Image 1: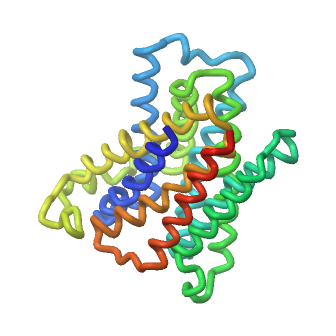
Image 2: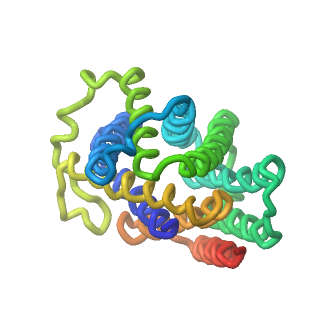
Length: 293
């Protein structure tokens, strides 16, 4: 489930890039993503188990923290980071999150984190360094690094909150409430009456090798909502019923590998031999993590 989710997230990066090239801002795309996912998840939960959506006494603080502190802030601080850093560097720093989860599990959760998980994390981070060629990035913006580090912390918090929340309710209703609080947050920050509706009605080329093909922006946003949000988020949270947040975080590192390969095939973004080597190292770390039963 985590592998499929990471693959969908990786493909979603290229789809989002095409949508953003239409003039739709990153924050508006995130707002539409949260609202669309909220509507879809509420519909699915209502059809499957209507009673699962009832809010239990004392449960809303966890759901609000999951929605705003996890769903919203991971995306918000990632976008803030990539305004000042190269996307690859921001993504590399964000994926320190799984390492923070492992440290939390060992220090505060009193869980036994097997030695090979630490080796797997080290391999995965090393592979990510190779993929983004950190040594050739030049000067790194300090505030951008700070935003990316905050993103890593809230990414770790998201995984831990999801692991805690899925013990109390099913993944679909947990995500439905999380995205509802995220949508409420964005509605206050960016009121819907100011949403650029004309932008989503435009038809844009798909760029790169698919430049001859055109789609309306709303179709790209629909992809982002359904296959880039509802499906992968549900798979990630559902997976937490079967594996720990530590292992989910490690396996999720497949996302930047998929994103890089898709950008190379679709958007004609170059992929150097050292980046291919980095992808292989990340995959080695993922496979090693899978053996840590």
